[in-house]
Amino acid sequence: MHDYHVHTTYSDGDLLPRMVGAAEEAGLDGVGFADHCNVFGTEGARAYRDAFGFNLDLTYERRRRAIERSRNRTDLRIYDAVEMDYHPDYEDEIEAFLSDAGFQYAIGSVHAVDGANVHDREHFGRLSTAEREGAVETYVDRVCALVDSELFDVAAHVDLVERNPALRGLLTADQYRRIADALKKSRTVPEINAGRVLDDYGEFHPSDPFVQTLLDAGVEFTIGSDAHEPGALIDSVDRLADTVAERDLPVIELDV
Ligand SMILES: [Zn+2]
Ligand SMILES: [Zn+2]
Image 1: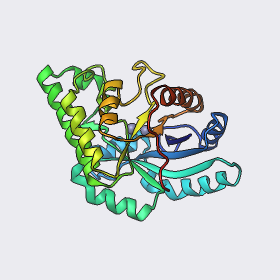
Image 2: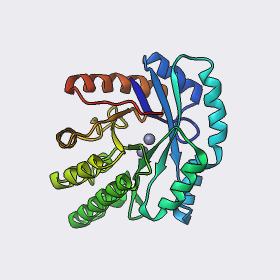
Image 3: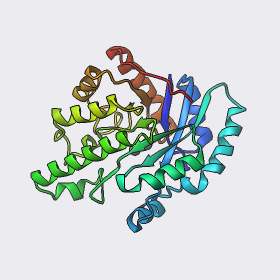
Image 4: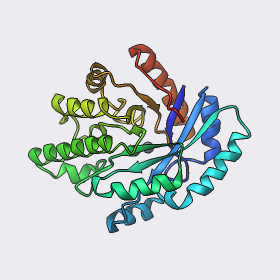
């Protein structure tokens, strides 16, 4: 199995050698390091990036050298990748950066809606039901635009709003279908993402009914533990292998 979505200290994860060790222990055939990266250049994005140390746009060459050294010490296939923040207003910046950097593949993510992080329970908790539904609709618009942009190999956690109790359960069957239709027409593949499966949410992204809609549309998946530390990687890979086998999910390897 290939886990294409793992974080290191080049964003908000653990040390790269420790994550390589965990990938070996988990029995993976391949692991892809996809650290957070943002090239929007807005004041808000810059403040967020500075606060959390998401500087892969500045450090990817250093990480690449570390990945090359790691490859010499293991049979595991190790991929040099990125998890890019996506917004339709910054497609040119994203495209230019990706083309310069030359990662083996790129994961695209919508992490914010209307200037607020999708995880922000306080912000979305203050909104009325109509406003929350509006935020979810905007989220779906952004995910569809991400897929339509053809900038990415993988679309990350396509129902990220489910992670936030203030937004959970608001995605509709029509919205599942909109995202499924966009994916069906695109080279971009969604992932089965285990980012919160060991956490309070306890489910994979996408949720079971959403996965069913994607399966009905003939969409395939990649695997992403979205792990930030070694123990989570090992446990998530276990859970991912189980769910793929139980549901007989069509999982692909990226052509990299
Ligand atoms: Zn993410
Ligand atoms: Zn991630």
